[in-house]
Length: 119
Ligand code: HEC
Image (cartoon, rainbow, N blue to C red):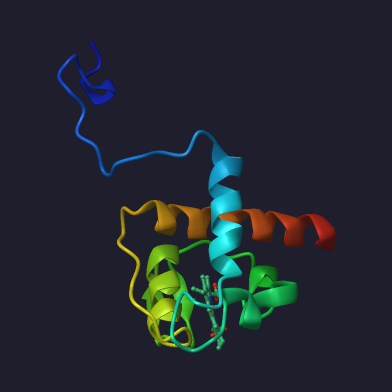
């Protein structure tokens, strides 16, 4: 038996709850990206990032990569938390939370939309 697949012992969870599929995570993420009450600044993520603005999708980079504003090499989750803390004036999202997964899922869906429109 492949030890990487996990045995019969109870699996340890990273969190309570799960998404049934990718689209469910995207839908939850869209609500978060549009939410002007996530932080204290009165902005939503899409206040600054509508029409694919400031996301550098055209560079076709994967994370981690260097982001000028941060002055550091960051993963997508770290970038999301940087924007939560700074432009949003909010709190960081917990790394294993459904919110963080939803944020990342919407990012991916939004990027796919951009790439489709570009070609
Ligand atoms: C007040 C404006 C503002 C708000 C609000 C904002 N951002 Fe940003 N975001 C920026 C700027 C500016 C950059 C940096 C662009 C650069 O350096 O090229 C950025 C960069 C990013 C990047 C990385 C782009 C890259 O180069 O790969 C991601 C991902 C991102 N933001 C997600 C979010 C998310 C998620 C939220 C909401 C939680 C959010 N942002 C809210 C202004 C904002």
